[in-house]
Image (cartoon, rainbow, N blue to C red):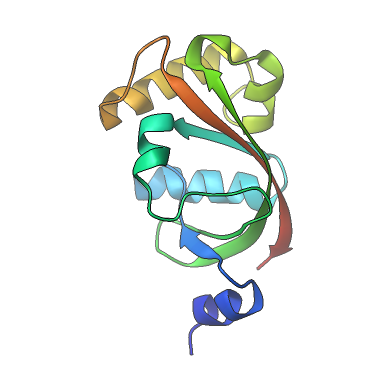
Length: 136
């Protein structure tokens, strides 16, 4: 049995996944989550609706690094819809990336969503807030 299987047995219903769209980004973001710096994330509503097992409030998630190794387990605390253009400085800080500014957040997330094919200024995002329940 693998460590991921053990974690899925411990946290029933947990899904294992990584942040970002490449291994380097997954490593960086997983490290920020594990350290408690990154306590929020977001995704397009379009992508969220397409997921077979989208996050729910109270659900557990095994966060993987860019090599597919688990680094921590998080629990989803809140989910809300927010237009891209209405993301706040406070939420950008909770995302824990770069210089923590809203300007950095907008530039990096715009680039990410363009690569994913989902970007528009008025696109709806699912804003997630979570806590680390186990660091590995």
